[in-house]
Amino acid sequence: MLNPLHLRTLSAVVRTGSFAEAARELGYTPSAVSQQISALERAIGIPLFERAAHSVRTADAARFIAERGAELLAALEGLEEEIGAFTSGRLGRLRLGTFPTAGARVVPHAIASLTRDRPEAEILLDENEPDDCLPAVLRGDLDIALVYAYDLVPRSWPDELTATPLLDETLVVLLPTDHAATRGDRVRLESLREATWIASRDGSAGSTCLLRLCAAHDFVPRIAYRSNDYDVVQGLVSAGVGVALVPALGHQPANDLRALRPAGDPVRRSVLALHRTANTNPLLVPALAALQAACRAVAGEFLTPAGSR
Image 1 (cartoon, rainbow, N blue to C red):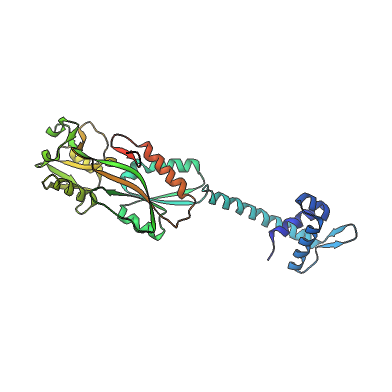
Image 2 (image 1 turned 120 degrees about the horizontal axis):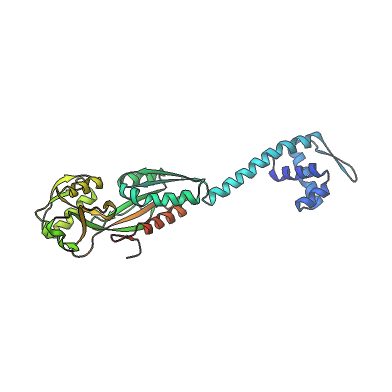
């Protein structure tokens, strides 16, 4: 197999016409140059130079190999540059999974930052619920998955995954502005005992959280409408057909509704980034940093970057 080092030395000797000049150019001794050329000649099976006492004459084979070798060396240098770009995170592919509300509020900031700082990198996005993203991370189909966990519905993650906390969302009660319970800056859940509720689908973590929170206040909410689309939930509340408990990322301020914390200790949903601990993708570190910065960018009354409580 040809040695790229020997090809570079051959090119220098052919260009300068001298072992000594090539040695000075490359920073080698003339003896080292001679040894490398001899090794190349043994590898290909023919002499490359006619050696005299004080000079060498370049054979046609040497010119041919040097010319074609230059193409190979240029390609090798290009590959080395690309490898350097990949290992530094300037080049490569990152596959990110997210749930809808984080996809709308957090992820755009992170992707904008990554594509601005690493325009050659390819960022792929897939939107799904955490229970669907989790197997994809374990299979290696996703590098990072954004997931959530409610305080009242604890979750654990597989041992082979690393979890990076990103954001704490306060759960808020959405009420029409003319609702009697909107008179203060907090709402007592007991006052909504007779209310019609809007919730996420039956069995979901959000719906389970609502049931457990209401149970702690000694009532079962009367759920009439269900949707996993928080725009739909907010629209129903604005229309005055019910009230809802939603995480802060699912709430967009509007003139016809109010978002109030439940009275008592705050109830939260945590947003985390999961990745396989063994994943060596160089884009992982900058992607996590971009997601953390994005969470700081959306911080507000009901949104707190992880670690900032």
